[in-house]
Image (cartoon, rainbow, N blue to C red; front, top):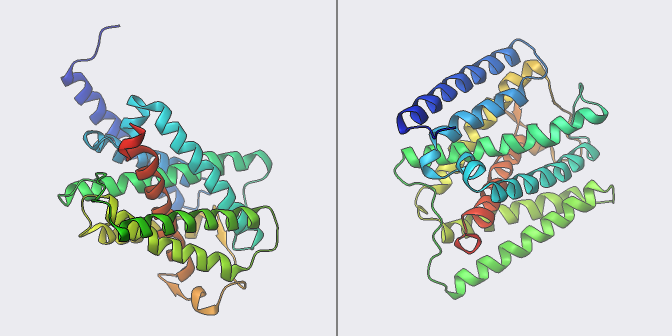
Length: 276
């Protein structure tokens, strides 16, 4: 079969973007109409749209076609992390899935979570490119401060992962310990990103915009579809259960964590020059 010309590639990519865009709108509309299995199709279409628009930035869709080993490694890590974090949340009675049972959770762990994270990553690429600072790895000159931040972030990430694993296994884990390690890790992860990406001036703004937009985008249709349902968070301080746009505050923080984790893994598993 002959190779496609540039004009054919351009045309087919635009058709795919158009079809996936229609799919995004359709699945979101279905969620607002109460269709309880809207989210998987929505994030798959959203990831496709943004990924194709970001092809020149060599984002996740580009890696899926050109460097599949790295892409599927990243995908596998996302699946594993999503499974552990979700098991922890279920054991803490923070949320439930009314319509998923048994093998149905394969869809949750292999589609809903990983492609939700990939869509977040593509949105970061899209926003950063349109704000004039593409997401690019850049290690600043090594210094004592650089070394301290790198070491502390790695240690906190390992500790946080260990705490999540223990909680997911059903071992007694204090909620305060989970929250504290996660918050401290996010602080040092942001500091570490500042030392490893080219646009330290506005990366926090990008993360905040991405988190806020996707939290509303993912949560508002689900308020009617109820594909997942948040329970009264009795294990958390009442302050964390206060709502903004009818979404608990801890969910907003959780989505920020859900944004930073894929970004951190992507930069150090894929973008880092040492893995090229």
